[in-house]
Length: 187
Image (cartoon, rainbow, N blue to C red; front, side, top):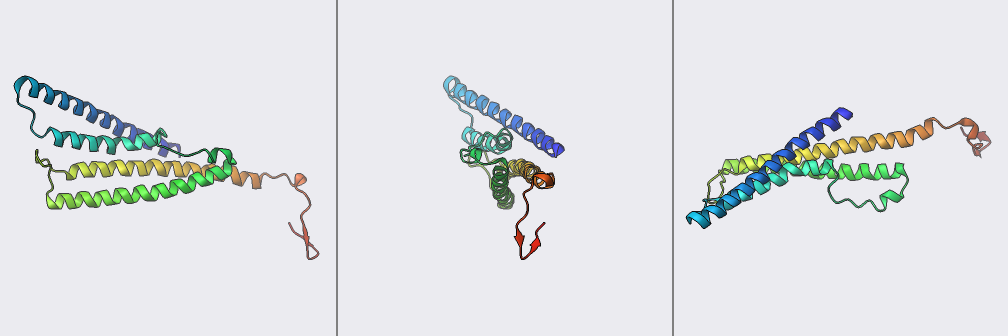
């Protein structure tokens, strides 16, 4: 379990660093375009295409690390007031739903990237093929699915450790006498 957590965190961190690199490239591209436009009266052609691609890559690559850091919006006001075992069960159900959602999103994005590739879809001005960008976004969606899978495994383990030991380690001396039904002792 720790190895899955470590693998997911390291993969997410590498993807987040790539997203940071995309932000730096975007900044350099915009500044260069402004300088070239102001000084030489000749802007870079396709700047909007490049910036749009870099924004999409930034979001797709950074979403998993945000989930690792618990940076997404979460409503835990009610869950925090519940017993730990109930909270772990609810978190497990929410993670299962999220895993299904992000898994379908990744699958759809892979399918969409394939259709973009088959149709030869390119950016309007720069004529850059867009299917590799969609495949990279799909990779980011698969990474967030892995993060959620890791959290789901941890929550299921928490449910198991919070509920099962309470039933196994119960001291027989402290258990009240069982209810007698139809003349027999229920054990």
